Length: 268
Image 1 (cartoon, rainbow, N blue to C red):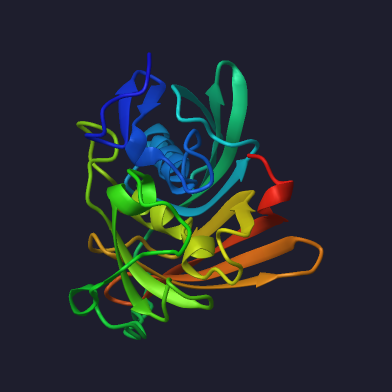
Image 2 (image 1 turned 45 degrees about the horizontal axis):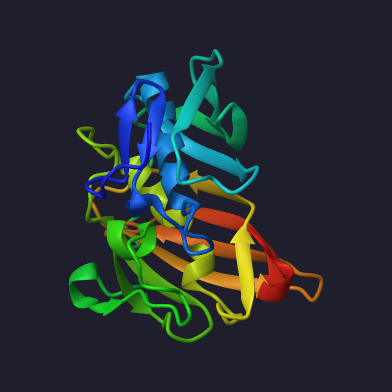
């Protein structure tokens, strides 16, 4: 198995997933964007559960090492539980684990609770036209520039500081397979650090070591928004925090730990 043409982010072969250039991340031409393995593991967990009444409510992914642009194998084990169930997953390359995830599912049942009608604080995606561009980030075929349609809704990505943007897939994710609502939210959630950068990309790396996403419901349309901010301490440890919205309102939150280093000190 080898790298595939960029028609979809992944092609599936059983429990193996072969990434294309559409999975590539910003830190190395040979490593994936975190949103690609995150969405992949979320979808695999949902297939493992195979129960529409169980809602993906939390996912924590640890990036053990850079996920290579190479064939990857997923393994999953599912716990027991009628109302709360966990799926534990590993993502491996050449029998080496490169990422782990724990996905928590909660049983969704109608309750006598009035729905929130708070909307969201952002202009809708049809009113947003500024693209996602980060100075110093090479514009090559990649997950962030090629697989996703990203429209800045607040702040800016050509300068530092908090920002918000709408996200949707513009390329198939796993060839021949649908993209679930949870996968759309999880894929977008990993963009928090790139969206809200406060250090220049050409001078520093701010790679996330993990991603935790909480969802109270899944997005009801193809668009998902993040409103993100970043903090970095002088010790080289940072945090990106994001509120997650669909076109109806708030649906969740996400956090990423960041490992920050000057580029001359860092090799991926």
